[in-house]
Image 1: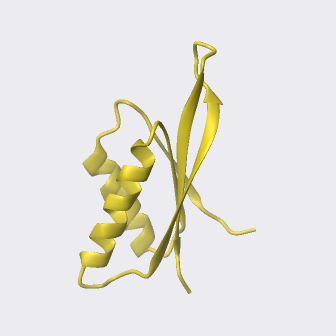
Image 2: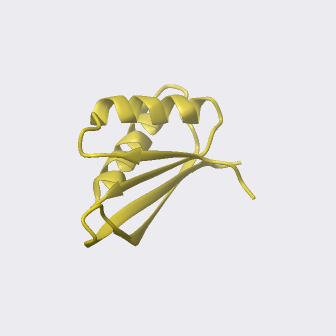
Amino acid sequence: MEEKRVVRVGKNSEPSKVASSVLYMLQNGENVELSALGTSAAVLAKSVCLIANLNNDSIPISFNPSLDYVTDDFGETRTACKVKITIKE
């Protein structure tokens, strides 16, 4: 089973800090999964992938989004997006 770091993006998460953290993890050879309600994770992950590819030391990565349903603190079912960002070998 492949190891990955899971990053949960909340409504108070600062996108630039999350993106910087994920990019740092990728540069250190770690696979990352972003998780957030709605499509925030997909947008943020795509931004990280673009930054990584524009960087001088391009990181060969793959971007795999998926949708899931979660129950929030109030018992309501909501759509959540999970994006797996893995380093290509």
